Image (spheres, rainbow, N blue to C red):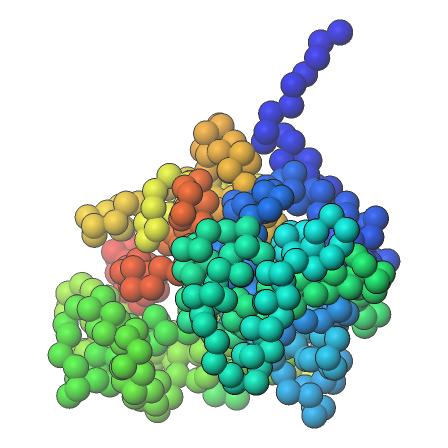
Length: 570
């Protein structure tokens, strides 16, 4: 009998599958206790998976501080105080007296119903639900460490915990206290050194939408003690409306129809249309900033101009560009559908082409597509990319008439984890491989490695892995995709979903041209294979400006400039 020793990658993939099966099961069931049998199964699977972003999660004493900061910037402020958490759909709370809470780094409305209960709107599909359940599971793991570090063998509170309680009470009353002494007690409870605790405390204090580290630690530990000693269980539940609506494109359909209505109302429906998935500033700045600010800022180089605009003290300049754009062909659609994806529509016939940045024009004599329309959509989240793109590529329904959109290209600029280089480097997709399935989507990418070489950044070309969740990746699985015959260069969450929708529309439904051009380019926000370079280590900051505008420029050149073969045909 041959014994097969499973590799770490195989063990991790099994843990990932168990985790997702457990989450889907609990969602269908409607509720669970995080430290009950089902919750413990999720905790066990997450610990086996050992995601890089959660750092020292498997250490029984040391609380993972970078991971906690990462999740609390994506969870509503005050959630650590709530015993009951309920995930809901859009159910009318936006018209109630409850004040919505929006996490600093996730677009979702949350409502603090009372001292113990938090409602969180889930309108962006399964990926959003998996994301938040994973973060909550990690939060409960760390809360258990805090409890264990704060109680002795007879479940009596240690002196450090009692002192932490006094410090939190002093903070709430606005009283002064000795911070150095307070950090000493806190470091004991967190199982970290004094310097590590002091550094983390500064990071939490600077972060927006997050309670301070003292209050977070106390709230997490208190709820864990209540459950451990007094059997007062914590609970996560899902509303019946959320379970009924999930997977039916309800928010995506409304979102896409709003866009098509604006196109129709402004006479843009019959024009050539190009879709761009990107942020809400780079295309606008590339098209308008030079003209809008010509009397205020003198930068010929688009990258330098963008870096100038990204500084906090220059927000008034961004406002000026935005106001100018709205008067010269840009339409701003702030989403009200629940999809939480803002949109900008650009009528290029109203652009001042003579004053576009030289990086886009290349030369003044280059023929330009002037009568075209750009739809720039903010980033979707995971599976939501399929829902939104699938609905957007469908014909516009005007009464009984179906009017196909004249879509000529779909362009995706995204942030991604890189497996070969470092932060800020660029990746060009040749295919999207969907993690955990046999699905893969080859891409005939109109962007090539040569478009970006010679700009001071490393450029990698190859397959991209579309992962089930960025917070669930570990080195073993990623090394497998990178080093095996897959030869993957990076990982992201939307590519396979976008390509699935594009192929369905162009190859099966025939609702758009079969020769529709696609452009996929990503810049590296992190390298999960390098310690200290995961998403939990912080954002790119100004380092993200260069790759963002290089990619934006190449996308706009591909859309606006007439190719040589087109000139011959003309």
